View 1: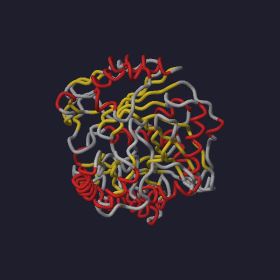
View 2: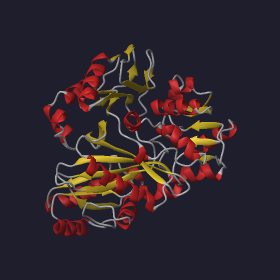
View 3: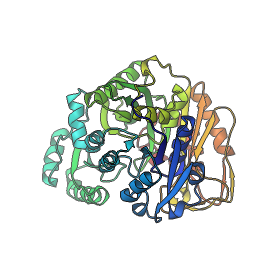
View 4: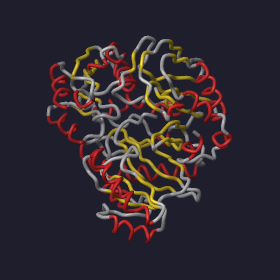
Amino acid sequence: MGREIKRILVANRGEIALRIIYAARELGIETVAIYSEADEESLHVQMADYSVRVGGAAPHESYLNIPHIIAAAEAWGADAIHPGYGFLAENPKFARIVESHGLIFIGPKPEHIELMGDKVEAKRIARRASVPLVPGTDEPVETPQEAKRIAAEIGYPVLLKAAAGGGGRGMRVVESEEEMERKFMAASSEAEVAFGDGRLYLEKFIIHPKHIEVQVFGDEYGNVTHLYDRECSLQRRHQKVLEEAPSPSIDDTKRREVVGYALRLAGEIGYRNAGTVEFLYDGKGNFYFIEMNTRVQVEHPITEMVTGVDIVKAQILLAMGERLPFDGDRITLKGHSIEARINAEDPANNFAPSPGKIELLHKPGGPGVRVDSHIYQGYTIPSYYDSLVAKLITWGMDRREAIDRMNRALEEFVLEGIKTNIPMHLNILHRREFLSGRFYTDSLERWV
């Protein structure tokens, strides 16, 4: 073991903060929770060994406040910082500052965050590693006129995407030349506001694709491995809603193919720690690289369920300088797992956020059911943050059993005082298209 970690500052909130605290405790490592003015009663604050308020309710005053977070880590004697997902997790400046203060950043190297965070640079690396790409531009497109010329060459529809970020922001589908100028300006403006970078690149829009991703890991000795694939095709406004592992859309031959592409990409840059390589999969059996997320994913539990590997503990061990604690090729996938993201939102009101006090709560249980959540009865969900309140995960010996358990668990889940998207999930699970696997990244928009 290269570096000892005795205390981790968890630079996040909610369920992922709790998840990190649990993993650290099992490794005998203490934790420091940070919290905002709005999160004083949050469960992660109560469960950590130590807790410190770092600012006001707004994220920029607290969970994005780098000086306050670093000061808290130093004041409370932390050896390392785990960023979770969201907030500062994929901010290379933050990772560099953490390391410059002699702290361990539990994640990839700052340069890897930077490389993969720039979509244009990530595509260059993928091409160098012989990973297939969607036809499109290698460099940002400067003007609507240039975009029209390129789109005419590769054929409409095309997709404009922000070069500096994801999550659906700065993204527009363009069906024809007449739409290009208006949508180009809208996408660029949105990207500028969201990421401080209005650059766009353009690629062929794949009609009815699947979204398949591969969980990868690397250590500092140049070794890379995998934990197979997940399917995240059911999305709303480019945000994942329900995920499965392994993907029901590919066979073992295709699984080996996409895992191979992901390992090629990770190996090309000597990737360290956990990451996810994301692909589109078309109806003709082709994979296309779209991006790499340099952090732990929201949907990591389903991979844990089918592989038996604790992903967050593996992150911590790798940050301590250990070699990869497992070899993905030696792991046999066991069964099938599904995750439903339970959000505090009102499906009947265009999915508007639904913060408020939880008056009554009953979490489902029984065989093959896991709930990752920071909520409790009497807790008030603040209005300042993401609407995710729980991740409901089920496991079964096969996909049918995992679906049946998810149905049961959703019906048992009692959450009164706020609106949630539980009815939407039940609707999804009963659709013929879902049961047969005939769904795509645009399916959910048509279903709800």
